[in-house]
Image (tube, rainbow, N blue to C red; front, top):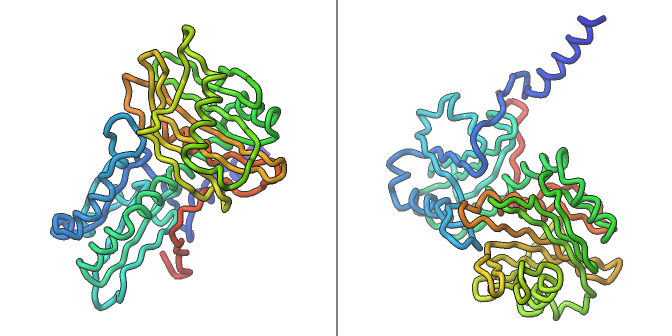
Length: 346
């Protein structure tokens, strides 16, 4: 009986890593690492430099320069098994006989489990270069949201129960935040949770206010609301100290979150009358069931650390917010067509 049970478990483990009868390894590498498969000559040419410039961009909204991705490159002829298990791969194919226009699609788990391969096919180097210039933000967003989707899968399994319970009790919403956010404070239509550490402090805030129509969804209105809520609920150590927004370094724009309209604010916060500050990102979404705006925000205080990883963890958490009437997959739409493997693929 014990032997039979072992065989069943072993078979299940084998099947979980199989694709078309093959046993696939798990993808390797750190978050936001990208491998570009392209000929050396093309990589150094204007077409290749156009792609490099996309990947070499800074993360927006941070107080210092931090690159969006860690970039590696390999020629197709050297693409062996060691390279095939990279978590994020961009495959570039230039062939005028095979392609009439430049297009990009992605495939999941092509060479390894939990892997994404983005393929760009083009008839010429110039067409590829022009495509990169025109679609640079789509590529950045795709790779960033791909990593956030991986994070969301992890958060659904292990999350801060403190944050989840407060979101449900105060706003009838569901939300998954990093597990280490255990400290909290409550206010009127407000809560704050944090890992409350002296080094690399991560924070989530959630608050709501009455929805007064689409004309109020603009930068001035949203940041005024933010400042009033933070001043009332997150004062500094001494009287006269409170959190406020550095409006000159903050960008507000409309985005789509799980098919619905939202406003994203991304920039810097400062502590009035104190030498504290850092980056923040927030989503403002309308709950039509209750006629309110629900805002969820992540912010960081980490003066001695790089902040890209901390902020992207919190930003991924914002996408898990489900308003009371919502039920959907938490996976973020990456905005690029997915290519399904053919039935004859080996």
